[in-house]
Length: 165
Image (tube, rainbow, N blue to C red; front, side, top):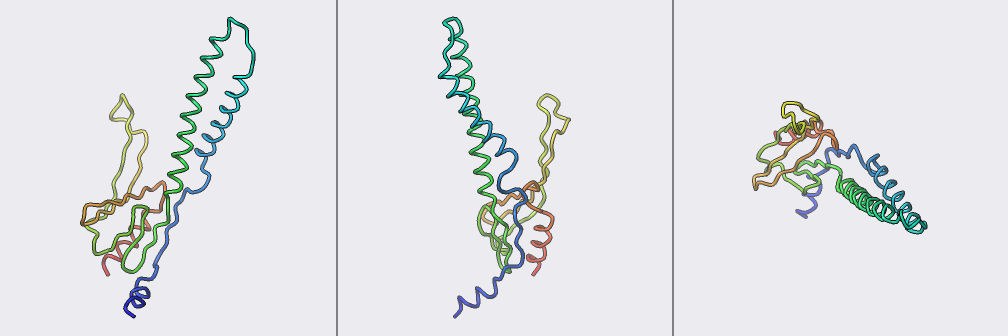
């Protein structure tokens, strides 16, 4: 009977779905470009060229193959990132993130971190800023939630309420 009382007490309080899921523009772009390059390589390998132009054909085929490999890798890793974005589920006693489950009693610290990407040759020029919600556990495991993927302000507000209880 104790297991039923734990299930009842640990009810879901809030669920935060990822903002970007499914077919994103990057995934579509790289996927279509990979397919176009694959078709281009297949058609280009069957085209007959003059003896003087065969070196150019080989170079262009090799260049298209390497670009296709890069686009295929970008497609795969974009898809993998999209699959790993799972909803953040907050319950009465613990929460689920894409990095695992953490109990509120095991949280050491939760804070915002501003990640700034600077220009390569101008360190003072900030190109892009991304804010993260970092949840540190007592055992040194961290859960980093990006503002690009989740509504981190709502998650942080709900987390503060649950930790105070």
